[in-house]
Image 1: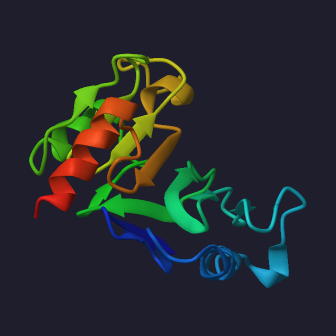
Image 2: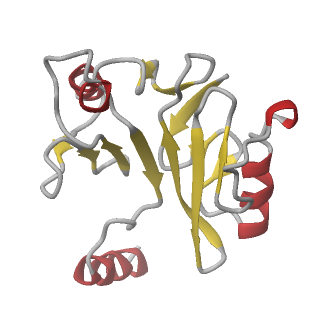
Length: 167
């Protein structure tokens, strides 16, 4: 299955801003009834047979973020505009992302990257860019798609609130 990241809208049936109950149902739709993982936690995360983890985060009764963890097999792919975010080396993903948007090293985790205009965050535990055998550092381990304001500080949230009130 191919899952397309469409920031800030969502991924598959998971839509940022949807009601918690609808998000729970959408998350459950990713489960394979023939191969239900014992690690699944309804309303939190599911694991597909490929090992792909899909997790939701809700606040104030609505879906605010979706995180996807790297699959173990290629049966499921996570794509952004045709870029396989888990199938390509992290540096290649970053290079291709830069064709579409700004993407920067995360100041708190230099092995990870954030595309602030898209509210996409790419994580790996450490950088091992030159060693493809070191999968945990050569490839991204997870990607997060979030609602506008997800990473805002309190001051930024106040400014965002003021700007949207002035529209």
